Structures are given as C-alpha cells and as structure tokens.
Length: 92
Image (cartoon, rainbow, N blue to C red; front, side, top):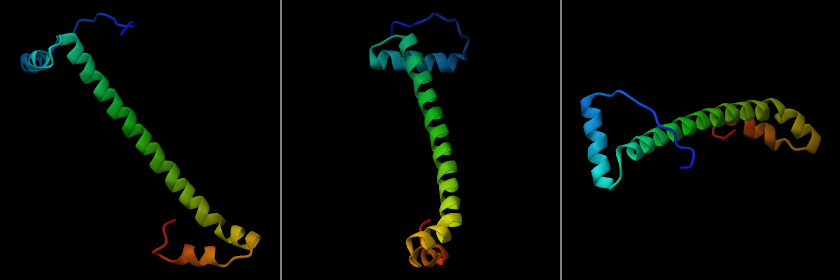
C-alpha cells in the first residue's frame, strides 16, 4: 500500500451507501473498499484476457496438430495419428 494515491470521484448515492455499508461490515474505510472493488474488477478482466488467449492458442495448437499429423506419422512411422485425427471422438 505504499503506492497509494488520493483521487476524487463522483458516484451515485446508492453506490456510496453500498461502499459505506461494506466498510462498516469489514471494519475498514471507504477508500479500502473502493480499492478492493477496483482490484477485483481488474483481476477479473486479467483472467478474462488470459482465458481468451488460452482459447486462441488452444485452437491454433489444434489446427497445427491436425495439419502436421500426416508428417508426424510419416516421421515416426505410425498410422495411428492419422486415424485419431479422422476420428470425430478424438480430442485434438
């Protein structure tokens, strides 16, 4: 918390009432509650972005595996990779 900075915000009365109620419940102050809310929102956004990236790279890896299955099969002398690629139940 050494990098704290003061700011001024405007918010609806109901939101301020919510923050104040949470501050009382958590035995802390309004600033700490607002900081926690912002941090929670930021973390959720970072998780969303990471999940999106994982999905993108998983699809890319799947496409690469499918495209290279024949070459890999030829290189290691196995037909099973091609059979798995053609099998709709296989998880590529």
